[in-house]
Length: 191
Image 1 (tube, one colour):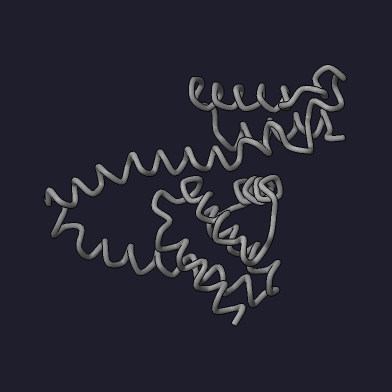
Image 2 (cartoon, one colour):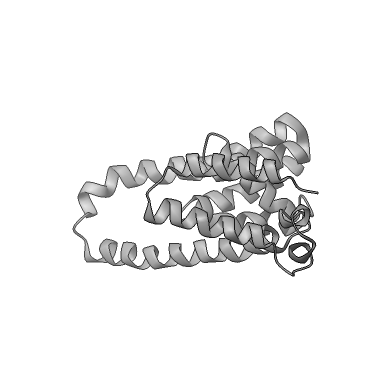
């Protein structure tokens, strides 16, 4: 029964995961709660690891959660659950795209989905921001006592700003920026 529940939970993510990646973070967080009671900070760590490992975020999280719940078989079931709907949907879309590409209904649906995806990414920010800038593990704790006693991690906020500037303004590679920020975090050290 656990395998069926895992499969169905991740099928739901696969079917409803419009926008993929960060757009479905909140959906994933809500969907895995019956299997793993985890904090936002623990989930943010799972997302961070999923972002720096090869493959889509949904697949990586499904594999991790499935493995934690039911070993290799659970990882396989959860991964198939999240991937199967995308395979079916994209197969259908590819066959029908030429036929309906000029349809006003299809164009309207796509125009409606784009802002919703931005909203979903905003929901991911709401889920991931608190543990990143005000969580228990703080980058500023080892620097100055003044920074350690603030309600937010000032170093983490500076790193968020630097990441936005490096990627948004200077068009630096997200992979390079992740590596740089990871190295900075390792040097500063979490105490």
